[in-house]
Structures are given as C-alpha cells and as structure tokens.
Length: 230
Image 1: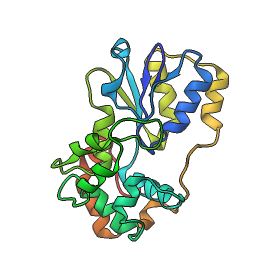
Image 2: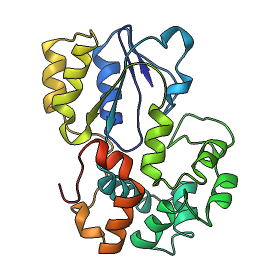
Image 3: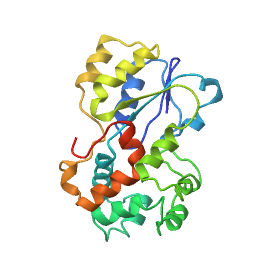
Image 4: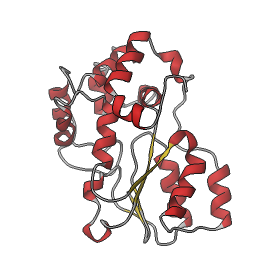
C-alpha cells in the first residue's frame, strides 16, 4: 500500500504492483509505504476518503506467473508447499487445488494453519484467518484475492496489467496526481520488476483446467473482458 496526498495505491499480488510501488516511491516525494499487500480495509482512517488505484490481471496468466515464481524458489511459500503437496504435484494438480479452496478444497484447513496468524512485511502477506474467508465462496483464488484487496467504499480505479504503462499514469492524473517528464519516461521505458520466467501462459493449460479457471474466476474475467489467450 502506497499513500500519497491524492490517492492510495493497493498492490494486488503478482499483478504488476512491485513496479508501480517502486515508481511511486521514487518519483512522488510525499509517497509513503504502509505495510505490504495490505487490503483496502486497512487504509488508515485519515486516508479513507482518497481514491484507490490498483491493477488487475488476466487470471489464467496470474496462475502461471505465481506457479513459475514459486516453483523456482529454494524455499517456496506455505501456499505453494501445501497446494503442490510439498512439490510432488506439477502445474495442473497444484492449480486445481488452488481453484478448489473456495469450494470443496481439502487443503484449506491445512493451509489456514500453515499461514501466519497476523500480517507481516513480505511475500503474499495473507494471514490464515483472512484466507479462511474463501470457504464456501466458490471463487478461484485470484478472484478471492481481488475481492479481499479491493472491496470497500469509495472510488476505485483499476488498470489492466496488460496495459499498465498506459493506464496507470492516466488513472493517477484523473485522481489529481501529477508527475515529472522524467517520471513519465521512466514508467514508459524502465524494465519490469519481479517478473516470473515462463512460457506463454496458454501452453500450461489442459482444456479442463482452462475451463475450471473460467468458471471459478468468472467475476474478474467477465468484469474486465478477459479471455483465454487474449
């Protein structure tokens, strides 16, 4: 969460937020970081009237990025370890388990116990009691995370990650923010940060897994006009 005098930027996991965070802290003198991956409900009261800006991503792409990033780590996080059954499952099995957390997922109780009880300052920063709220929703993990981060009263302006370099500056200007030409050029041309190394995301999906994402993440897919391979 990055707070400025004009807006608050919320960081949805693996959706381009690291790049935006670093840009804001570099080029907005008044910007300050408040926690990490914190949800809208934790915006300080004195900032609650400000517009909220964020980024959303194609869910099919999200799952590939998350899996690729975690599977290459020497010590993956508890979410990956649990859903992949300690690395014994590949992409298909791991993401199926992830998509079932909101329905009949047998891994949810184990995962709630494995995650921290309170907020920290690194990683996905999703406490077990917060993830427990996915139970019975029928949502895919990404749609749950989207609601968890962005739900609340007031103005919400989201850019699509796929058009991040065009849409984020436009949203900031619309919220009353301003920035230098140097900041403009940096945002347009600086290399991406925290990017996962993987092939094009459609290559990872069987037809049935593709369709399961379409069903479980329908709220985000339909709201932002996403389609598989697009």
